[in-house]
Each structure stands twice: as structure tokens, then as C-alpha cells.
Amino acid sequence: METEDAGRPGRRRVRAEVVAVAVPTAVMFALGLWGLDRGGMWGDESVTYLVGRRTVPQIWRLLHTVDAVHGLYYLLMHAVLAVHPGEVVLRLPSVFGAAAATGLVAALGTRLARPRVGLWAGLLYAITPMTGHYAQEGRSYALVAAGAAGATLLLVRAVDSRPAPRRWWMYGGVLAATCLLHELAVLVLCAHAATLAAARVPRAVWAGWARAAGAAALVLLPLVWVSQAQSGQVAWLRTPGWANVEGLARCFAVGRTGVVFWVYVALVVVGIGAGRLASVALPLLVLPPTVLMLASQLQPLYDDRYVLYALAGAPLLAAAGADRVVTVAGRLWRRAPRFPYPRFPRLPYPHPVALTGVLVIAIVFLVCLPLQLKNRSADHRPENLAAVSAVVARQARPGDAVLFLPSVWRVGALAYPRGFRGARDVALAESGARSGTLSGLEAPPGEVRRRLASVRRVWVVAPAYVLSSRRSPGNPTERLKLALVERHFKPVEDFASGRITLGLYVRRPLPGAGAP
Image (cartoon, rainbow, N blue to C red; front, top):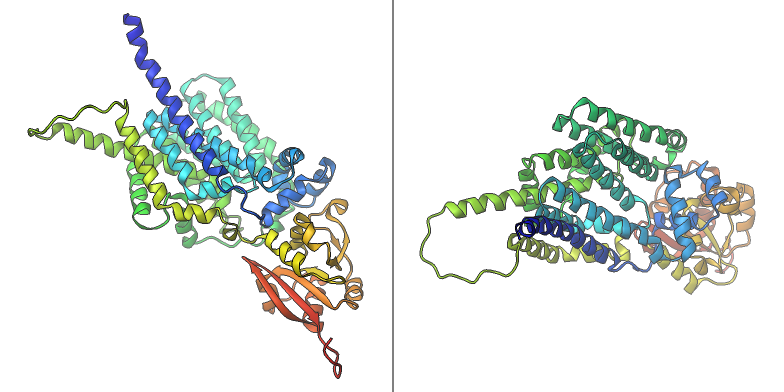
């Protein structure tokens, strides 16, 4: 009988830990599926879709010229899209990645503190709008976040069970795979080094970590070498400033403005004093974005999505802060003088404090519901290529032409080819799959001029600034396309979808001639 009673606390603890991880994971999976089919891919998603549908040799050839940093992800998506090529299937790996990251955040909170901290941290991570945004995007960032959270949990386990060479190699393997999904995930090593320093671990632990981290870095070196030659892909990035710091802080919070935001920030600040949990969560939250922003002062490399994995530190600190507040309030309540009051029946729930926290998080989610709904709208993305294709499908006439300024916007026509079948791509010389490029090779300027000579109507797909700016494109073919459109055609209709503009142009009448 004593043995059975002694085993009950242990079993209750295990059940609490399982619930603390399973509930947030299920919530995140449900939120990820909610509104997943929003009816249109945007530019980066269309690139994933097009490259993923190529053969493995074609993908390998492409990576030698562009997008090597996403090579492993494209190979993964090639296998996924082979099952069924569609928008929902395109985004499903991100849904699974976000759900896995949520469960790993909950597991970290449970291991470093207690089950209710893990439960709250996982739920806060799940309802953060930034998490939901990238859970529904056909790119690698949600998977990278899951890998970084998994590597962090393995780090904690390796430190707890020293000496453990097998655990260090598991840590190194997960870290290497995560960095191959996106090379900037290597900055998580800065956070992990700070965690080990704060814990004052012995030399044996430092040695095990150094071997695992060094092995992951060696695996990453070929990718770094190739991607350096492709640095022109991030030429659009700008040097980050204080506005980026504020923007990232609001993205990492459950609510981006108002009372919810400031209460969340206050809980994070309180959570900094949470001892061991803070030594893991605070470096993860602060160091990767800080290092990347500082490095971007020399060469701009910073974008919020590149440090999505650092978001895991915020809900861990907020949950730990809430736990500290509840603990202090409980102590004050027990010390307060007692007055006669009616006795209420005891609640049948074993964890009323944990359930109260869950209820508060549910209320916060409802308060921030408009932002959640906005994230699930196609209009919230930079552009909707399906809408652009639909306009051309409705209004194109036989003999119409289409021009892409610059040529990279051709990915929209390739992702939704049905709408552009009635319009001839007058600048295309060789397809992307055959040429080993992303959007294909274009004809020489003289050939483009000749092809446009007999065209009466042309559709122009371009960012809004291209036709309104006086800046001349660097590529000679792009300069010629823009000059021909401005000189020989006049706009008659515009359709805008985010940062992309679809314009219908008709040829100007010759001097002294009637309207065409």
C-alpha cells in the first residue's frame, strides 16, 4: 500500500508533463490548419512550389546559381509535393513544424520549471500572431524554429545527464540539419554558449558542446561558401535600426499594442529572474537577433523571419514571470489575516492555478482575434498571385502579350499558368527548368523589340514602383522592356495586389493615325 501511494505523485507528475506538452501542440496544430487554404500563393511560396516540382537533378542544378541556402528545404518539398501538388500540401510541413516547436517550448518550460509553466509557455507560443503567420507559409522558417527549439532541449538534457556523448551527438545532428535548412540558424550557438556560461558548467560539458557545435559548423561550411557567391539575392535588405528593434519586439509579443502587449512585456521582465529557465530563454530571445542586427550594420542580412526561432524565449520568460507572480500572490494570501467567510466547496480540478492561466490565455487569444483573422487573409501577404492570374484569365484576348518587370515575377505565371495561357511571354527564350535558373532566360534586347513590334495589347506584371520610378534597371533587357512599354504603349487598366501591379497597356496610335 505504501509503495502504491508513493508512486502516485510520480504518476501525477508524468501525467501533468504529458498534458503540458500535448495540449499546446494540439492547439497549435488546430490553429495552423485554420484558414490554411487562403486561396493564393505569394512570391516566395510560388518559388517553393515551382522548385519543389522540378526533378532532383534540376533542383541540384538550380542551387548552383541561386537559392542554395534553401536547398535542403527544396529537396524536402520535392518529396512532399510529389504526394499532391497544391497550396494546402505546400504549407502542411510548416504547420507540423510550428506544432513541433510549440510542443518543444512546452517541454522546455516543463523541464526547466514545472508543468504549468510549460503549459502556459506552449499556449503563449501557439497564440503569438508571428507563430501563426509562419505556420501557414510555404517556406522553411517554422521548421527552422522547431529545429532550434529541439536543439535547445537536447542541450538541456545533455547538460543534465553528463557525461553523455550520445546526447551531444544528437544535439549536433539536430543543429546541423537546422542550419542546413537556413544557415542563419547557426546564431543559436551564441545563445547556447551563453546558457552554458551562465550555468557555470565544468570543462567536460564545454568539451562535449564544442565537439558537437564544431561538427555542425563543418557540415555548414560548404553551404556558406556557395551562398556567399549568391549574396545578391539579399541585396534588397537594408541596414536595421531602432525601428526594427521595436518591430521585432512587437512581433515577438502575443499582442502588438495596448494593455496586452505591455502586460506581456512586464511578465517577460519578471521572468528574467526565473533562474535556470531564464539562463536558457533569455539568451535565446536576445542574442541571435542582436548579433544579426550588429552584423547587418556592415552587410545587411537582417529580416524578422530569419530569427523566428528566437521567439521561443519570449513565451518561456512570460510563463515563468506569471508563475512567479502567482507564487508570490499565494504566499501573501496565506499570510493575510483571516476573516469569517462562507466555505465554498473545493473545486474538483487538481490544478486550479494552471487552469486559471489557461483561461486567461484563451481570453487574450479572443482579444487578439482580429489580428489572427488578418494573418489568415490572402490580402495580408505581400501579393496574391492567384488573383493576378485570374484577372488575366478573364480579360485576355487572342494575340495579347505579357511582360514581367523584372523577369523574376514570371514565377507567378508559372505557379498559376492557366490565367496566362492566352498571353504570349514575348521576352522568354528558355524555361527555368531547362536553363537551370529560377524564372528562365530572356531573349536578347533586339529579339524582344522584334516580338513586341506586332503586339497591340500587352500585360505588364511588375512591382508598383517600377513604372512610376525614374530609376533605370541595371539589366539591358529590363531597360529595353521598360523603355518600349513607356514609348509605344499607354496604360488603360491597373490591378494591384499588395506590392505587385498588373497593368494592361495598348499601343499608342501613330502620329496622324486614328485610334486603333
